Image (tube, rainbow, N blue to C red; front, top):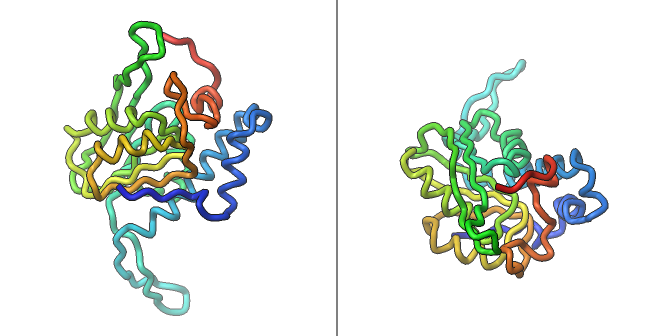
Length: 219
């Protein structure tokens, strides 16, 4: 798996990352969601350079112009619920893509720090031969992405898989390298080196789903 980290280069993306992390700024849920959406747009632009292109003749008022156009069949699959603003950012750029939604949440069967990731809901078109974009803002242990990959297997084999995330851990990324096809690519805004005992990214930004949409009751 190839990893592309936005924060390795100076760009406006770093401003959006800093606001997502900032405990004072992130209290504004609308801005928090919008910053995730913005990063989804930026990573979509970067990702778009990896697609296949064919030149097409475009008619203008004064003649024609040949312009290279992407010809991949794209499916965007986001992990509910935190993935929704990231999904929207990607959809803003790939506006004719098909869409898939899947749930994946942490289940603590013994009410301690040990957990498993469960998938309970999925709505998806066929993925056979298509370009799949998997979106989840937080890549902590990597278990959510890995379990989603298994859950969508009956939908067909994609020609290429791109993962899009905002903040990830080095440990989670190493885990995914053994779970995903070698030609998969990860597009991520920034990477932290540490996970705490509960599997949360440090320094990270907290719970992205809660910050986007409000706190939830645990079950």
